[in-house]
Image (tube, rainbow, N blue to C red):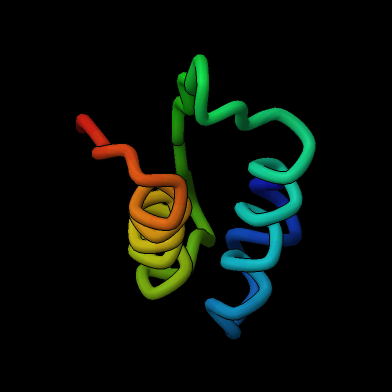
Length: 68
């Protein structure tokens, strides 16, 4: 995930879309995905929360649980 542009964007919807793009490209419900999330200076708190919320939605939609 782009920490320079996506996580600093004031609209958390941009972050949610980025999570969906990653999930669409790499997530396989039969096997899973390990996602590491780091954020730094300039990250919008709402965008950081949106990362976790959206990954949880991805997991729920696939019938899996998320472990954090």
